[in-house]
Length: 294
Image (cartoon, rainbow, N blue to C red; front, side, top):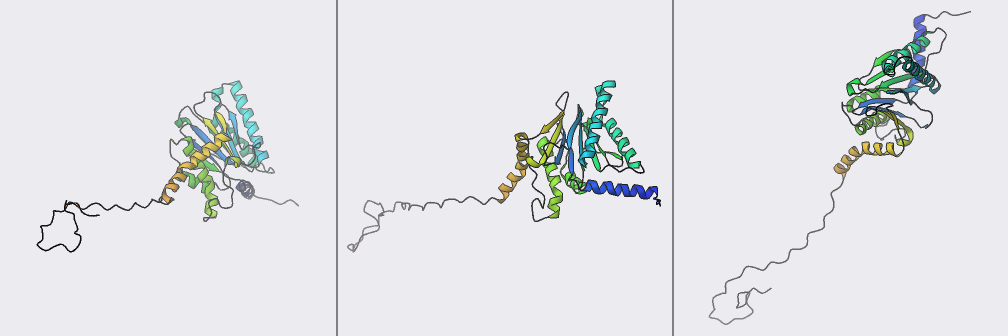
């Protein structure tokens, strides 16, 4: 005997199901900086990417189930290629791609018997100037939000967003943006274990991070991955400022060698004593020439 489920209850159950699936993933961060847009996510795999290129100036980042957002990524690449071929490459925009993703996810979410996608994706486009940058966040139910400056999404997005908001500023350099992103991604673990630097999570290093940028200075394809020595150098540089400051404040003062004992300085020339009527009974303090005896 079939059971009746109200549309409200069905949508509520689907939203809870998708939200719990996304909550199991690690958070990711997309940050605008002076030279473009930075995308950072924890990822121990070197072949299963969470961050990818969609088109010339557009990047894609996702969290959740890999097989589901990989299907969306490939479909987005196809949409961008077909649009650019039929019309013009300049007609492919992050806004149009975000609307297409929203329709696809919203249609799937509203299907009575369909399973909702356990994903959350971000589409970013770098402009010729910083005011032309666009960052869109698309949820599992097809809702779209415009995120100026930065966005954190994934399992612990609220804590990461709070930490990132405290560190973000317009016109940051790439090193400063990476430092803010790493500090924000480490904030949930630090809050869970205040006595430890990283809590139960491993330290964020080049080996377990996936980092890419949309480089504003490039003319055609702006997407570029940061990995290997290049990424290691940026991470060291981003952490060098704070480490150097701690060293200066906590370093013990250098030991100084004891000052050498001061040599006895000769006393000023003493005037010769007037001759005494009595004969001397011992050596006098000064010689007859006025030079003191040492």
